[in-house]
Image 1 (cartoon, rainbow, N blue to C red):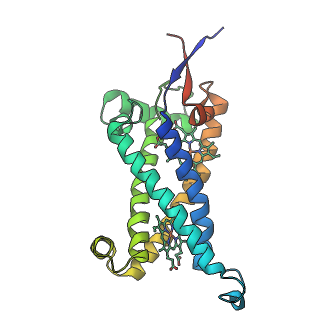
Image 2: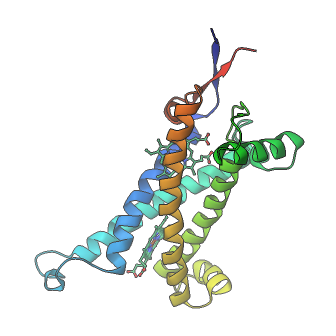
Length: 214
Ligand code: HEM
Ligand code: HEM
């Protein structure tokens, strides 16, 4: 009989980041679609209700939550525990490069071998890192649109995007990354959870994973 032991892997701060990030994205995408193409009757605007203002207000509240979550993740990439630091997910050591290839083979159903590790597998870690950078672009383009005359945001906004119109275009295109990522991410979490008895999904609530006893 296989025996497992519990290992603490995610700090409270990491779990807080995860749920602030995931929930704010749900609100940002929904209100973002509304801002892009309002689905209510324009006759309502500014009469007995003001849906566009309400949607923008929710977008900005969620945007601040989203930005705070990214600040937390940046802190954890540098000062988090061993699994949370950036070096743990970069393919820069033999073990990590090996894990990357092993995961690719496993995900493409070529091999059944699974590298048991406490942190993220390297493929997942790189996808999360890409999402982190995409989030920074969302924040800069978003605040540039929100405060076009504030010297800080306009400075970065003009340097990176040039015009506000282009910032808005990138803001919109990048939204699709978050939607596509979320679908694949949830699918792969469930897939992994059914294949390995490490308790992957519950780990993002409890901070604990299960490993074979050494
Ligand atoms: C994953 C995160 C986010 C998603 C998916 C998202 C999505 C969107 C979308 C789809 C639009 C409509 C743009 C268009 O016309 O196509 C929009 C507008 C906007 N977003 Fe975001 N957004 C996100 C994060 C942020 C952040 C962090 C801010 C920072 C304040 C922000 C501020 C804005 C502003 C100012 C607008 C323009 C509102 C207007 O023109 O009235 N967004 N967003
Ligand atoms: C029901 C919904 C969700 C569940 C059950 C879930 C579950 C998980 C689990 C189990 C992990 C750790 C996986 C691993 O070790 O590789 C994780 C990490 C992560 N999830 Fe989710 N997730 C959900 C929704 C989302 C959404 C909607 C987003 C954003 C679009 C998201 C973004 C992330 C990110 C960025 C990480 C990496 C955390 C880190 O930086 O260390 N998740 N999630």
